Amino acid sequence: MFPLIVIVAGVVGTLLMTGTMWFIHRSGWANADMTRALLARGADPLPVDRIGKNAITYAAGEGHADVVHMLLAKGVDPNAVYRNDLTALMWAAGYGHAATVRVLLDAGARTDSVDNRGKTALDMAREFHHAETVEVLERAAKARN
Image 1: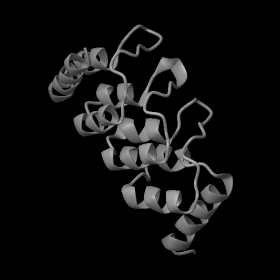
Image 2 (image 1 turned 30 degrees about the horizontal axis):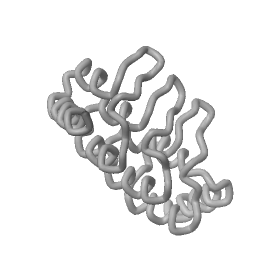
Image 3 (image 1 turned 90 degrees about the horizontal axis):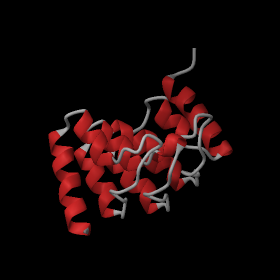
Image 4 (image 1 turned 120 degrees about the vertical axis):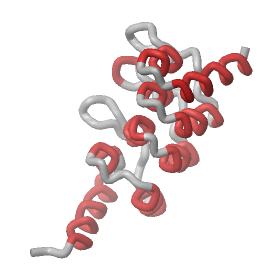
């Protein structure tokens, strides 16, 4: 039996060799320390998985504002569009992660982008009754108009 640290080191080594980060986030292992370590060792934050999502999409949907900040600092586009015309802002808003929404807005995420159903991040926050997120997005939309 291998100690957990050896198994994790093996997974991280494999991820570094493939240059992808989305696996860590999709697996639920996402945290700032793991992301910082991967980025410091040259992991590429941009590749997408088989369903068209990358690390920032998963981190935004899970409310990892610190991870989203790190990925943005490495050049991830806050307005990149993924499957179904969704953005990281929409993922964060739909799950009510106001702190993550703020990070994305501060990085220039657009509030007027629409998905393939014609919904904005604000529409998604309203649909799921995320009052704080709605307030943050309304304030941002007003400030930009």
